[in-house]
Image (tube, one colour):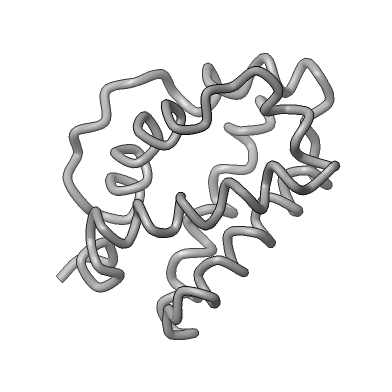
Length: 120
């Protein structure tokens, strides 16, 4: 069984995104990067990517992480912002009751895309 399935599949990804983005938008370190962004549209676009990253269906056909974050990187997206973003990810997983051993599997996946997100 994949990590995606272990976590609850599409419903779990949706629940996590629904809980995650209010935290991001409330964080003054991160929220400026989302000014003017349709968050509901973003969640619909990112859910398939998240599913694929967690070992679920590979039906994401959008831009790469580098392409998606190039504008943000040019506006100051850096390690401190990325780290704050990841802290919110981990907080949401804990709040949703994801077992610590599963969080320990998820977080390295997210940490592993740092260079792509920061366009290094």
